[in-house]
Length: 289
Image 1 (tube, rainbow, N blue to C red):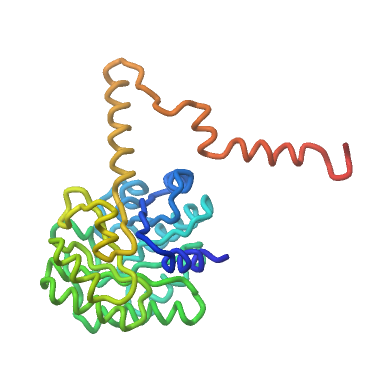
Image 2 (image 1 turned 60 degrees about the vertical axis):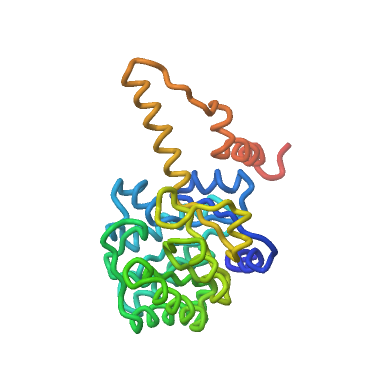
């Protein structure tokens, strides 16, 4: 079954999908091992992990698609991917969708920010006019229907720049254009979240950013509001950074840091047992033994 079909089946199943976001193959593997049914390659997190740089449009299409290929190669669960603004005009959007699909992603998110874009919960973002936003989504949908096969998530950041009514109007239009999932970034109240889910007739995603603009709600409440997916874009990156800082502080102070994960457990996480089993299978030439 293709990654896209796996995602379609999940979207058709009952209940909210809790989606921790990944930034590399290891974090994706940990998400799958923890029992989650899907993940999302976060642009913020990939920019941080791969470049050590902020999510302000600095990371390129080539770097993102390369990261997607490594992530998708490490797991069997469907992974959604941040396609930013599509990296150019409508033809670039189509290339982005096709390239992300070839890398193994199940869905590509395309947004309506001005390039270079930035994290939706930070300062200084702007959005393109409606016509340009609609053209981007149409191009992504066309690429899907012309053979890419992946799902399309359409995102609007217009809430912060133009108000909730404009963001909602764009979200409705994205669904009408054929987007499979719609994401209204940074609603600022539970009532806005509820209205969005009620007015948009395709699966919707909530973005749970700690200390961001959107109320952080329990999964059960998000599901009751009407969301289909709850994304946690920075949770793993945040806890990983905190743990590394603690370990480095201990080393700097002359102490041995608590490894938290044993060497045996770490070997299991990255797949040594499977490797050894495969190695034993080819220990003797065919027909011998």
